[in-house]
Image (cartoon, rainbow, N blue to C red):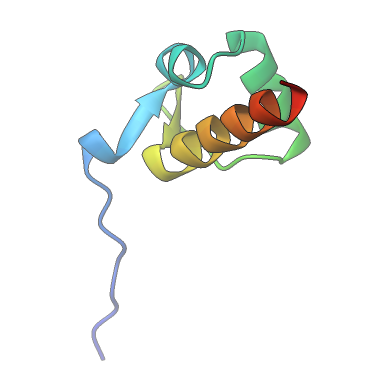
Length: 70
């Protein structure tokens, strides 16, 4: 029986500093969210990566909050 593996491409993942710039928050905020289990992340070779889908979800939530405040 063959097992299936999820394929993750390098362009599907972004580093925490890059994700922070896209979302519009400080990178330490993202590390706190990762520590709290709020967002998905993977650590590879000492570098933490966040799936692009999570980054887009957080960016949209951030935009929605800004629109509500306006």
